[in-house]
Amino acid sequence: MRLLLTAGPTREAIDPVRYISNRSSGRMGYAIAAAAAARGHEVVLVTGPVAIPAPAPLADRVPVESAREMYDAVRDRIGGCDAAIFCAAVADYRPVQIAEQKIKKTGDRLTLELEKTEDILGSARLVFGFSGVLVGFAAETEQVETHARAKLEKKSCDLIVANDVSRPGVGFDAEENEVRLFFADGHAESLGRQSKAEIGQKLVEIVEGLVKGGRL
Ligand code: PMT
Image (cartoon, rainbow, N blue to C red; front, side, top):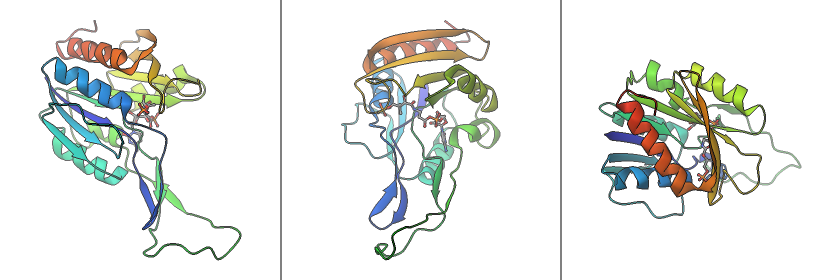
């Protein structure tokens, strides 16, 4: 199959030297990319800035910085893919204005006005017209199942991979992960704490099954 994957964080510029970002290391997304490539799939990896090496061989690796750049890269490449997995931790908000010069320390307080970024996963069906298998992640710190099921429905996904990111040692910037899978048919299952490489392999096998028309 041809698989589009997003991974890593985005950076939303405040001024020429500062940005808003998050703790995503890219490890989870890169592990999925490595597992898919090892199983002979064509992988298009749209990646935010990370400090880990790219898995090889990939069909395409597209480095981006901001949510807007990630949106454009996905929009231009998702057509023709059999499946898409959105693992990136995309910033939900960005500064309304990017200062042209480094902001000077003039007062005791500084207020930044933020605006919503593009919802890339939410655009997959409605804007990009993607009809392949659509997998989103949900990083939650509370009411994990409720929020994950809401995302599954709202974004018309086939599967949501829910990450309880309040737990130490899993999720953001960790070597391991522990996730719950919520399928569009209502079925749910858990992948207990294990390496991101192992979770990546299982997710790729599950997505292969969904592409073939079954749930696995
Ligand atoms: O990179 P690691 O350090 O290995 O950490 C892995 C991870 C914790 C980042 C990963 O497992 C994970 O949970 N990724 C999703 C992070 C996230 O931002 O979740 P969310 O619940 O805010 O977003 C829901 C979904 O919408 C995600 O598929 C996200 O990629 C997507 N999204 C979000 C915002 C936006 N503007 N566009 C999007 O496409």
